[in-house]
Amino acid sequence: MTAPRIAPIDPPYDPAVQADFDKVMRGLPPLKLFRTVARNPRVLSRLMAGGLLDRGSVSLRLRELVILRTTALCGAEYEWGVHVAAYGAKAQLTAEELRSTVRGSADDDCWSRSESLAIRLCDALHHRGDVDDALWSELAGVFAEDQLIELIMLAGNYTSISYFLRATRVELEKSAPRFPA
Image 1 (cartoon, rainbow, N blue to C red):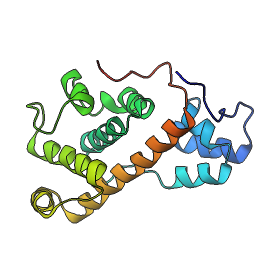
Image 2 (cartoon, rainbow, N blue to C red):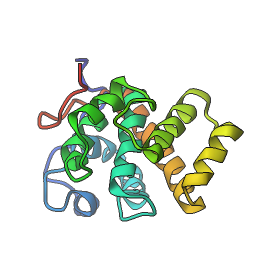
Image 3 (cartoon, rainbow, N blue to C red):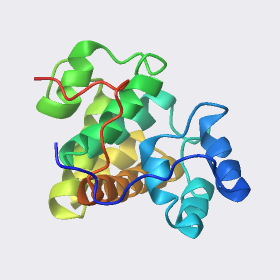
Image 4 (cartoon, one colour):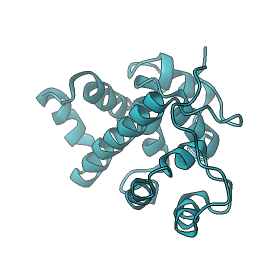
C-alpha cells in the first residue's frame, strides 16, 4: 500500500472539528477518512452537514447496496469495507451479495428486481455518467421520484468520496473487511 499523501490529524482535536466528528461517529474514534478531510475544517463541516446516512426515502439495505456498488466500481476498498463493517449486517447483506457488489453484476441470482435495477443504475452512472431512457423507464416503474433522486445523489456522493480516498491514499481501517477475492 502506498503511504497516505495527506496525513490524518491526530488528537487533541479542535472543539469544532470534534463536534463534526461526533455528528457521525457517535462517541467512536473518528475514521481516517474524516481525520484526513479535517485538514480542511470547512470541508469536513460541509461533508458532515451533507451526509445521506439518515433515514431517507430508500431502505437501509438499498442505500447500502448503492454505496457498496458505487465504491466498488470506483475501486475504493476503504469506503466499501467501512460500510460493510458498519452496516452490512444491519442491511442483511449476505457474503454472496457482498461479493456480487464487487465482482458480480445486476444479473446475479442473489438480487431482487429493485436491487438489480439499483445496481444497473450505479453501473450506468459510473460508466456513462447518464441513464438511458430504457433504464429510466424501468427505474421509474419501481421507484418514486424522491427515491430516484436519493439513489442518484448517493451514487454521486460516494463517487466523490471514492475519488478523495483514492487520490489521497487514505490508509485502510484495520477493522474493516477488504474486497472479496
